Amino acid sequence: MEGCMSSMLGNGAAELSKGLKQLKEEHPPLLAMLEELLQLSLKIEETPDKGFFEQLTEKVQNFIRVLDPHSEREEGVLFRMMEQYLGKGTGPIAVMEYEHDQAKGYIKAYMDAAEKPESMSEQEMVFHAGMIKNAYYTLTQHFAKEENVLFPMAENLLSEDEKEELYNKIKEI
Image (cartoon, rainbow, N blue to C red; front, side):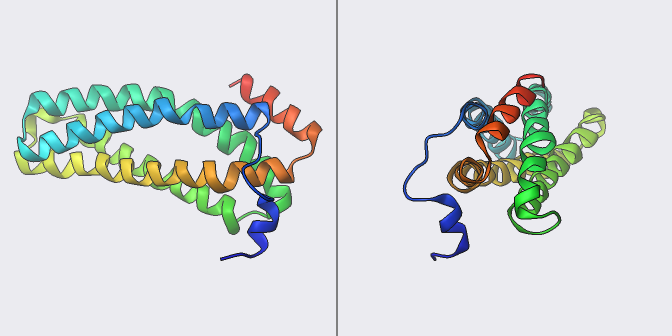
């Protein structure tokens, strides 16, 4: 499917500027954390156990502490800069923000439920651990879209001054 997006992406893999490179390099540690969350969620499905659920809750809290600043760098800086070229409310940025919201919604639903683990049935533990699985699948696909489409697109859309501004602004977050 060649189209208007391919012209924005250019030919081949683009060398990313400092700011985009930093955003991309933040993905592997997040993916490693997500993998741990997935494995623990699967363990809860097999053996619903309050101890596993509490471990998952602690790991989700740690994940949120790392994910939130990353999301802010993307949503608050990169996406806003790209909107001037791609528009707001539709297109790639709208999709990226929707996926951020979707993943955060899954995580929030889990954390809301995790406030009262003592009253949770095994079936409820499995259900809520499923929210983390949903976040895993949403974010792993989302990161791939950013790395393969959005970041190269930004590299080609943004001017050199804007790339420098992007880097400086994300360093502050």
